[in-house]
Each structure stands twice: as structure tokens, then as C-alpha cells.
Length: 557
Image (cartoon, rainbow, N blue to C red; front, side, top):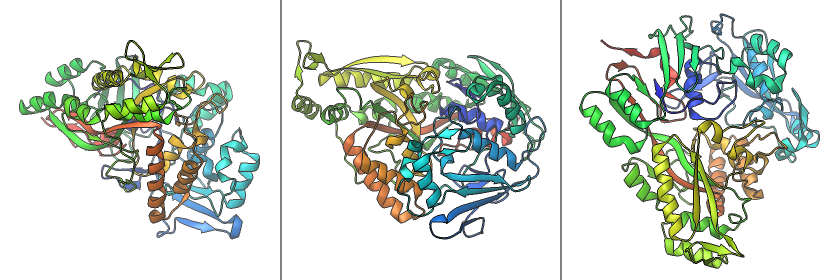
């Protein structure tokens, strides 16, 4: 299997890069009670049943302000870590507690903080309890100490909680980490140093493969785990090659040396080459309508970008359809909001910005900018010059940013392009990269949309602006601060009424597009290529990586 980017980490609960998830799913290093399959259904994984109110595994308990949502998971008893140790309910409780430790450098802990408790009822039952109204309001007043003190500000959204805390994703996910290995390690090095330990590059999992060798910058070798509870893998070994050069990727495909090339290494830009190789019988190419939303974050603390008219000028200056047609061979779609068109919360009633360079220049003049002798706009002696950062290992993205640079120059905005390695651009923790540290001005990357918009709160709610004070937790990199948007995102995340949530998210999308904290560019197709002899490869349209069923892959003669 070939990927273009090396995972920055395989640490438990760490890292948000797509390539992390590709490898982690093959390892099963963050096994969840339920998981999503290739047709966007949440099905049991380590649990035996997906909880619901209908089957009685989810229910409300208690009365009045002490009423709470309880979710019960009964576990399979045949799941083991790759060292042979049984996975038990205590592993899930341990993971929840670790994710809530303020010294552990996760990118977010929004969902975990909603829980009042998670407990093991014996070895094979997990009982999850969400906070009651009283508990939520007390957390907003005093903070909470589950596994280290989280301050009241972390729970500020619950200050006026009305009724029990709920989440529409109550039946989804919940990871387990190997307590028998990590707990003694924490006792030796402490939680703050855990992320730097060797196990974060060779984590124990419950999946069909385990890391046997990691050659930095080159490959990750994985042996099969014959005891995998869904069935022994049909392949003895999985070699994950890191090939950042696109020409080298195609050479691997043409030579028959790559059985799978994942979507991080391919995109619509390569459609003509992929079609040619498929006609020659060398590969099978797949273009699946995807969930990857390419966009540009605008740092709202930048003096130029604090002016809405400048942000509007930027989006009017860009010909997004041209980029789709010329670079991506028409296989992507221009987007106008954070919601992909296939998801239930998609709203057409948003502010749309056409390609209109004349309007862009007029907006800049209205904002008090005048052109200098070089054509670049300036105000109060300061040139309208912005640093534009993105990853270095994506040719289509590099070419796209160069087109955007020229388009912005034509309306008087100077753009200084900077391409960074992914591990430097996305890094969080004690030594954050430009996104988490918010030192960027324009930042280009992609989000992979989940099947539910609840997670949007961690992207655009003001409580999730990463900073040194909160140990750079949160992914509101633009720094959006809008009380009404905060209110809508919180309400949408905590309601179980789907019709009401549609109304809430429609208004939230309208506010977001009016504010222009982000330039939505296009939604990409999921592009993969496989050997003609590879069988049972089933790519998904969602954020679930193709390795979700790696144990089923096999090669025909």
C-alpha cells in the first residue's frame, strides 16, 4: 500500500491527519465499541449491539435536573490486543480518562467532557453516563477533575444547561486503549511525556496487522495478526510505503509494485493518467463522491483579515470553478459551506460568492486600501501582503495555490507562498505548528466531513480556539468568535431532534458564510487505485479509510 504522507504519530487518540487513520484502522489501535462501515452504517465492533432507545441500551434515568442519559454496551469476549491480552471494559474506561487528562495533547476532548462517568460493570459491560443538568452547571461553575483538573471555562457552554446533556452521537465510537501497557508506562514517565514514547510509533491494537518495522520516511511494515477476532487476515504482511513524489507513485502503479494507492497520494488532478493506466489493464481506478472539503482558513486576528471586506475580496478574487475544471478534470465540486451536499444538514440558503475580480477591488477600496506603484493595495503605509501556508506533498494543492496567488495579485493582494511538510504544518502539543499556534495568515488544507455535523462545534465555536492557555486544544484555527454561532453549534450538538437540528445548522451555515472566516473551495472525490488482482477492496464515501476491511484483502492469481 502506498501513501504520500508519513503519519506524524500513531499515538493513542493523537493526530488528526487522514494518513494516521489509514494506518490505525489496519492496526485496530483505537478499537471502538461501534464503527462505521462502507455504506455509512454504524455497526457493532467490539460491542455486540449498537445501542438505541428502541433496543433499550440507551435510556434516560432519574428525574428533573438530575435526569441523565445512560448508554450501555455489552462487549464481545473474544477480542484481544496484539500481545494476546483480552480487551475488557476497563480499557474503555482508561481511554476516556486519559483523553480527559489536560496534560495529554489531544486535539479536542469535547465529546468525552460531556460524560459524567464511564464505568466497567464486570469485564464485558461498559456503562456510559452523560452529565445531568445539575452536573453540567456545576462543571461550568467549578470545572471538573476526572483525571486532572479541567477549568470552568472548558465547560462554559453548560452554564445555562437546560435538561440532561445529550449528544446525537451517543452510540458512536468510544475507543479503548491498552491499560495494561499504558498505565505502568504513565507511572514511569508521566502523562505529559507519554506521546513521545516508542509505543506511539508501534501501538498495540486489536486489528488484523501490527507494526513490525518503521523506517522513517520510507515504510511501515506490518505483520498479520492471525488471532484477529473478525477472522485471520487473508494476507500475511502489509507493507505501507511512503512515496511523496507523484511520479514515483505512478511508477509503482505502472510496474505493478503497488497493490493499493490511498487517496492522500491521488486526486482528481491525475484522472487522465489513471484512466490511461486502467485502459492498459494495469490498475483499477475509483472516483468515489467524497467527504474531503478543501478550504483556506483565514486568521481573523491578522490586522488585514479582521476587516470583513478584505475577506470577501479574497473569495471574490478566486475562480474556484476554473481550478476544479483545469486542475481536477471536473471531478470535484465547488462548495459554499462546511456541509457536503450529500449530508442531511446541507443548506442551499447560504451566502454564495461568485468569481468577481471587479467586486473584489471595489471591496478593498471601500476598506480604505489604495494601489501602490506595484499594483499591490496598501493602507496606512502597510502593504496588503499575506503569507499563505499549506502542505508541500500535494502537487494539485501546490498548483492550485499558485493559481490563487496570481488571482489575488490581480486584485492587489500580495501572497507569499510557503510549503511545509505535513508533520510540521499540522503538529499540535507543546511545540505546535502554524495552525495550532495560529501563527498562519492563510492556511490551506482539507477537513474530512463526518456523517454528522455535531463535530463542527470543535471547528468553529469560540471555546475551541487553540492557545497556549488551553495547551493548544481545539481546531478553531481561524479564531471565530460569534455568540450566535456558538449558541447554534452547541444546540445542534446537544439535540436529539433531527428536524430541529436541521433548522439550527441551516442558520449556523448562513452566519458562517456571511462572516467568511474560511474560503470553502471544493469537495474532492475519493480517488484510489488498486492492482487488477486485488480483491475485496471496498472504499467508502465517508471519513472511514479504505483499511477498514484490510483483513479481507487478497490477491487473485
